[in-house]
Length: 52
Image (cartoon, rainbow, N blue to C red):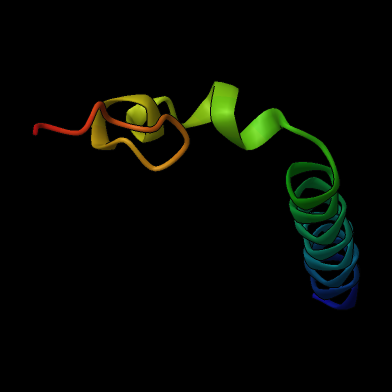
């Protein structure tokens, strides 16, 4: 039973570190615009032409 608990704890620690690493990569690079292309359709990054 202790062996299973040790494996679960190790896998949770590894998954937590991978989560932190992946969030850091998304924040520090422009990867978010490629992973979530909805920004192009909402118009957050592109200026919409003004209607006069």
